[in-house]
Image (cartoon, rainbow, N blue to C red; front, side, top):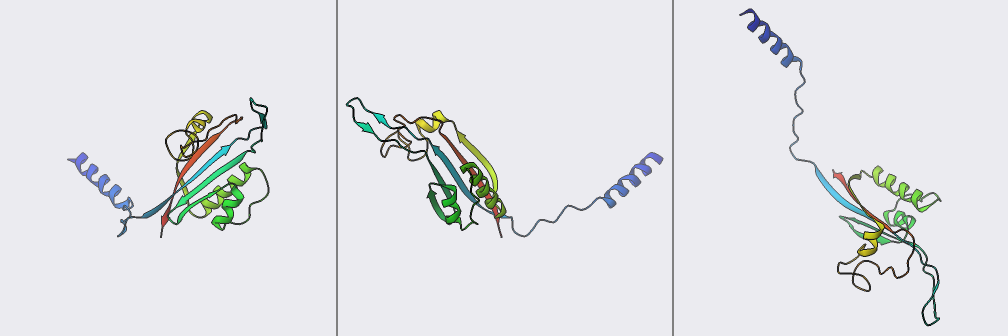
Length: 163
């Protein structure tokens, strides 16, 4: 009997000092989602075809796509994306440095990363960005035809709370 009373007193003391669980709000939180995709497209040096005709060089480029509830934006540089987002001007530097500045800006705007997908160079070359169905004009992906160097594609899914 004494142990039962001691146990009951201990349980009463623990439950009376434990904080109550927070009350749930009237409405569940609302979220909006966005997707940021980036693809590095390597350049190709000038070539000579089998007939001796010169094929001009193709400079390296980037494809950046921002999709959110307000719409879609596709640009060729992080600086151009900053302009479209009405973000502060980016400091001069490499594309990687400018990408970090954009990610920091999005974080300051409340966007949180919830998923990341990265395609290897082989997968990006075989299907990459664009419509499904193969390579070449209108067929999705990029016909690399002599492109050299690494190609990588990343897609980030983000969310932020809507007030």
